[in-house]
Image (tube, rainbow, N blue to C red):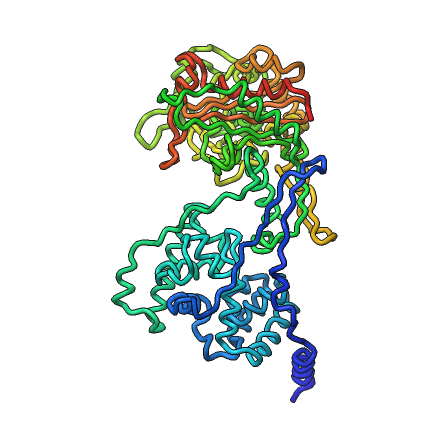
Length: 619
């Protein structure tokens, strides 16, 4: 035996002898509340109630047991608690940074759930393997399976198969059929990825894995092909319950903070459900109250009997230029509407997008012909502001896929004549902005939008209308983008968690860094145009907010949404009003909302809400 092999064998022997199986089998289940704090340090909410109830294995139907085994470890009753091939794959994944889940048997997963942390490294994996082998020697297979089913996390705050059955199907585990069992088994792969209530992509993954698990049960001989053939419809779970204590805007704030924490730290959803975290948020209590009051006093007065007032949504967000999310208005009440209107990516930004086009032009110049390089444009550069002007590319007129020549379309088909770019922004003259986007290059405009924090999957198709706001950023992202203009071109992505502790110790949470998104002179020129929009342009109603106000109204060609995005000092706020069918999620025209007249722009209520909010004393 070589010296290296002898050393390795010695290390393995030492690890096996020195690693003990902990006695505190259920210490992981000692749960606490998570406490969320306002930016001023006062308590905002408590969550994190773990939903756990042990159940004897005898009460768990055989079909449920075998669905789990088919999904996670079909050799469970014959292996030694570990899988040699799986161990090799998992250790390689640890070294290379991949996913280790596939290398774990049920015994190993039980050990990880019960004794160890969720950290993925060689030391933790080695301890898991040794404890799993020893546990397999100490306990019967049925005892291990029972412990695993009672300690595994299924999402929705539920630990254990009994509470999972209640959370997803409202029934006792003994009443589950094989189809429902297969879905619950799918959740063991990661409830955050397979709970259908969390989105369409989750549902698609869940359906695929549910079907695969049922097929595996047939392959392993635990479900007849005839019975499998009867399970053709996915067993839709019930809607998740809403936690108490999250009424009003609080639930939206908690959701934002939880999402940020999970996405920017090592804290997993399962660990967060166990509780014990003190989460200090960026949310300003006074600003949150003020934003809600502004929606109530300046927003549309809805009449349920009026068709135009059905399915009306208002979303708003206030973000500091350093990225702190200060306030959101996600809907009338989280307990009545869990959908967050401030964080949706379903509403086009409309002409509130044009300052981004303007910034791209000022910063990168234009190219109007096939020959020659790029040339600069300035706030005073003049464009054709007439309605119905053919949109040009360096090769000539732009022809759409429908075979029609693209033409500019101003609000009300008004002809503005020769118009400076600065005035086009301030007066919401669509034609020059549409042509400017083509001259800059829509790919460059898109890159500018991304540098201002608009997420790639919310950006619209690169066609001439892109410059008029077909992109669908959330109100949070829209506010943060405008905050860049206020901050002289420095951009910080929005964040909602300032710090986190647990059991007295700090929990690392990444915070976005400020980056230069625009040259300072460009940001200053955009800022000047936005202030002109308030002084003399389409945003003149916002002048009531006081000196220094800057902003832009936003409307869409099909009038399905209205926006106002603006800032005072270093706080930027975006407000949107839209109508959306609750089933199809399709947008409907906002004409006539709150009794608005036919000549009122779609931005009328967002502008009034923003102004009412900005006039209130800052928190």
